[in-house]
Image (tube, rainbow, N blue to C red; front, side, top):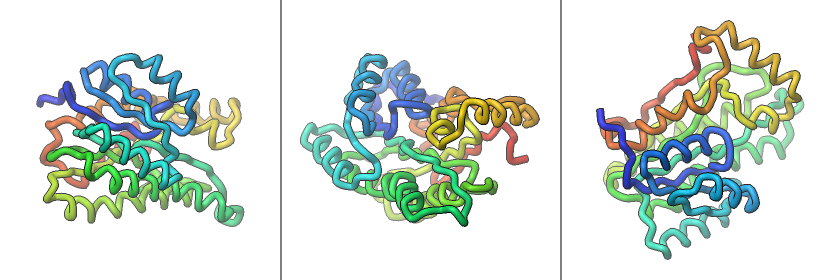
Length: 248
């Protein structure tokens, strides 16, 4: 199947690290034009310089609806039309239920659920017919992890919303599909508060999975390339599990 994304314009949220950055690198190599978002201007500038190619940076905090709407307005003013939208920005702040705080809950839901919802809504005028929306979800929506209740709920909430949106946005020929990565080595572990020794032990424990190791962003990228390409035109509300057999 043809999976090229050449000449397509694709927006990636949270593209300054991890899976988002790896997706940007891959899509640029295929000739795509990119719009990338990040919430730190210095880091965003650094990534744009590192990537080179046709990249438009947008300072945008996915937890800030005003930022999202301003970004969408700027893209409309610049007459930028999108063929693909990768909703990648996300956070993971583990906490046992008894110790969960209102701030933890609200922050996680704002970035992982509200952010993608309002990003998609705000960008509707920019999305071409047809276009592909790819949501980076998590294996945690179907496999329970202690202390990951809010994280799991936030990702599952968007998946549920997407089921309805695939019906409502069908007239625009917008398709929404999800990727559910398993444990993937990115900055998310350190941002979750894990120290180097804990991360190392955690990754080592994954040697017992069928794939025999922790996943890396490069394991996730081929599925992203497929979903944003025309080869996925027939998919609606599909879930691609990439967990190295962790869920078996």
